[in-house]
Image (tube, rainbow, N blue to C red; front, side, top):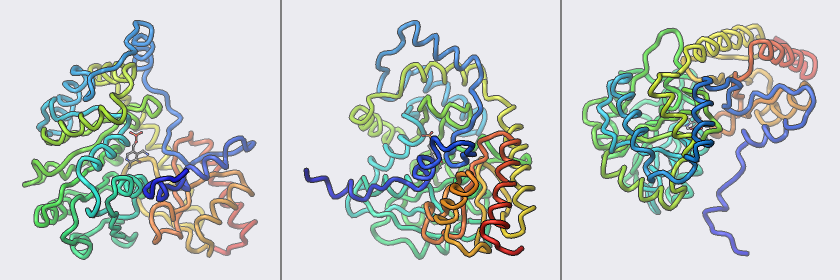
Length: 388
Ligand code: PMP
């Protein structure tokens, strides 16, 4: 068998690797995947069951149920002030497939895709699947993990075609403010780049901070697509539902691509999401619960002097600095799992510069998080013998 050259780029992410290692381990606290333990609202679950029992289990149009595209468009207009037509909405198999369809419609052999780091590893691998080249622009904790237009400027070349922005950010939990986004928008316009704005965590922002979308900056119309997901907002990860809002011409191409990739997103999930948008079933409780977990993590990490953590503005991730432990992130994560049964993700998954970080997904209840913190403290003090 001769595999394609492209597929050789594909590696299992360390996120999945650590998750797999944790499976079946007794007494393990698994903080790897961004997959919360919170159930969607009961009405959402009922809507999915009803759709199945009523036989609404066939294909939908490639771009999604018209009623769901309508609901998504009006939600974005009302909630975020985005001017969205239903024809600009393409419903996808998770936000993940929205990113994939966008990249496959925009990038090809010889093109470069600019990806700020730390990054969600799938951006890199999807770019490679499309035959394009990822160009990584690192950002640093001292600057709040925000890339500047100057740094982006250094990465640009005549081959640059797409820029990916992710706010709130996985893995850092930081949000990019309006002014920075404005700067980045000007940069994209100057170099005629198309921007994929991944905003799947925009429902999870703390301390009353407001989300800003680069798509609303002057001059971005026609050169930007927003990616969102039902996974985090409604806690519907396994329903595999997301969408892109893209300029009509691109939405048409994505729909054609969708016909060849998945045909459509799962229909019972689309009915469940329709219910969620129509009845506004985004539970307030999700944000309240995550705010409490975030406080537990911020306080807990602060109580371990060998670890460092700057603020978490949004998402359910903490990007924790382990440089005082003098151990690379992979060994740290493997040893922590082996010795104390806590599973976290090695920072090097998010870019070469981040081998002195680990990512913690606070997707479990506070009690488990307190226990995880206690175990991490014991690991550092008693197993690694790292002084404070
Ligand atoms: N973008 C980012 C930054 C993510 O972290 C994720 C989920 N881990 C996604 C997109 C896609 O999520 P989903 O496919 O579940 O909507």
